[in-house]
Length: 137
Image (cartoon, rainbow, N blue to C red; front, side, top):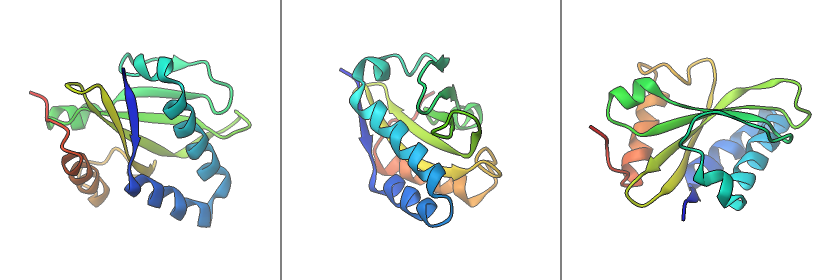
């Protein structure tokens, strides 16, 4: 059965976000709690689509540039708890397909979340490897 591991690194990312944008941090935390508790939803997360959650609604997609580098990473774009505004941050999940485990790796500001030349991408890849998630071909 699929499960989600919340890493200490993403918990620290969320804690830092609480200092500057507590509403966005709340939305990130609620989304991760939902995914942690709703195993049926988590089972289908690797099939990218938009999910009809109301609090918060979110969209999941494969992170194509990371996939090209051999990383099995998904991005979660999500809305605030009111469901009106897309939050300016992205959650990154690494997926270990051999063990059917998602790892919540990072919460990154949208402005550079997809920039593979930014230090945040290197940090994301390091977190992926620290979780011992196998790379893909």
